[in-house]
Image (cartoon, rainbow, N blue to C red; front, side):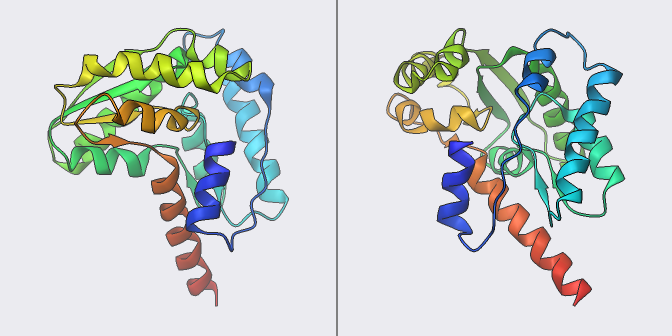
Length: 210
């Protein structure tokens, strides 16, 4: 939650943010190769709770629930954003070869599908090369952000020949400076772009309702 709170504070401080966290969702998602119907229903119920709290928009910060986010978005009358749409747009603007540093294995498949769908809809050819950094997310959850950042940065040179490198998850964005120190290509993170996109959508909706 830290990276997205920082992004809101820097880019949209007027927004009132409320964090909804269900640790069980990510724990159970890690046990599934494919996102199950039961887990999709749990996710949609969780997001619907946020809407019933009075939210004007919902920004999902975990990238392992793509199909569930699609269903939630279809069921609610407010903006529901996937974590990485804005980052994808910025990445393919840099070129056709896109690298991605990930730390949560179950998210890689859904993120790859989302990236491919985004590229197909943009009419700009691009290919994704992913490096999964073992152990990093477990260390971060244990409070060792410094080692998390170091492990992510150590794998970054494997993607130095790409046109841009995306840090796959909101949690990974804290390693951005460490990664930028070891590669020369653009290093992109999701939180800032996501906050900008949510602000635009919420403001546009408020004008229509005015």
